[in-house]
Amino acid sequence: MPTLWLVDDDAALRDLLVQYLREQGFAVVAFADGPALDRALHENPPPDLLLLDVMLPGEDGLSIARRLGGLGIPIIMLSARGEDIDRIVGLEVGADDYLPKPFNPRELLARIRAVLRRREPNTVSHAAPVAPARLLEQGPFRLDLDTHAVSVAGRPVELTEGEFQLLRIFLEQPRRLLSRDALLERLKGYERSPFDRSIDVRVARLRRKIESDPAHPRHLLTIRGEGYVFVPEGRETP
Amino acid sequence: MPTLWLVDDDAALRDLLVQYLREQGFAVVAFADGPALDRALHENPPPDLLLLDVMLPGEDGLSIARRLGGLGIPIIMLSARGEDIDRIVGLEVGADDYLPKPFNPRELLARIRAVLRRREPNTVSHAAPVAPARLLEQGPFRLDLDTHAVSVAGRPVELTEGEFQLLRIFLEQPRRLLSRDALLERLKGYERSPFDRSIDVRVARLRRKIESDPAHPRHLLTIRGEGYVFVPEGRETP
DNA sequence: ACCGTGCGTTTCAGAATGTAACAGATGCGG
DNA sequence: CCGCATCTGTTACATTCTGAAACGCACGGT
Image (tube, rainbow over all chains, first blue to last red):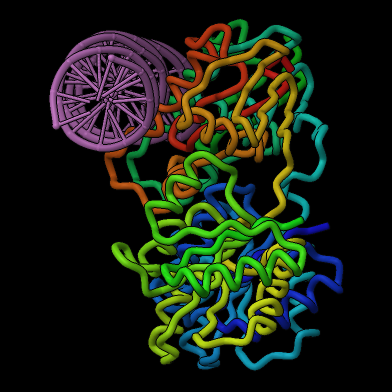
């Protein structure tokens, strides 16, 4: 049963929504303003979804949404002002959806379900008590995506965070040529400057830890003028 | 049998109400002023509901209500001044209802029952929100959310309140990467300043108590540049 | 064989993190 | 009301990680 929290200063609407959403099978808790929400957040696990009114006494909903961005809680903004400008600001702030008042409770319900469904795959929440470790395996390489622990052919290998990220990218796309630009794009999310050699250094450092003979790599290969390829099985020794 | 406490300096009204409410099946205790109430609170479990006169000698009822806000006691304010302004102030102060004097005892009774009913099952106001689980367990970690007692693998561990809060957040979202901002948001409810290291220090202190080898944590892991992850099962070679 | 470019490697400084020391805040007992 | 102990955030310093720069080898083309 997903948990929803509702923040709205209109007591009548609050009661109405709480009742309706409970009938629809959600665990609903309502708050009148930001401070009440903060207290709840301080003492409880975060909800699966937050319904947040824009117009609130004191701190407004947009500010709250911005503040809560890092928590990874899906947010649906509610607002009496249905103008597009609000729409945009609301979504920029990290909200997952936006619903102008007045709205039909059914539409709200539909959007709630949509957002929850969209978030489902990643959400760990307080759902599965025995969540299986997320593992990434290729050949003798095994990465635990939760703990960032790594082993090669059963032997544990100590990688730094940067090396782990790089190896992860290679394991996700084995046998695929990856240009330096592509790698940097995935690592940093922006384009590299012309003389950026940081990838080369990272590759070298990674090789030192996962290749038995770093001078003659069998898995993490250089393609001159192109980039790097990762071969899980290792290149056959001629 | 719900317990009601009444604070009013008018002895005649006090006796009248006490008698009437006892006949209606409540356990009623009356006090003349704030200090008397404080003494009682100091030595007894809080009542199920507090009836609080606004006009009191010494500290007035609004101030008391504000002071008691954190205790989560439902409050009904009583006042001789029936103006709206009082109404609002009274409710902002955290009171659940308001009754202008003079009032019919039956109306008071009705409001008492309404407040108790509203508070009972699933609170919709700004008080204690989610019905909390008594025990939070993940792997070998056990937190008693009532007593704040902690044990790891059956062994009791002494944690300070701050350490407990931090561990609780991690247990609520195991295997989830939590940024420093997210942690601070949950802990303090506001955004952190750029050079705030308090989270790091807390983590270090917590590690010292729950990790067998704090220098090489197996459960509370650092993800450089990202934040921290808690892994109940411990870090193993994948 | 010569030369320019690409790449591996080392070095070094800045950033991120762990941790100890310190100090203000708080609560308690006397 | 006054010490005393505890807790908690701040600060400073040590350690580790990371990218920039420098250097030199290797490759490929002439």
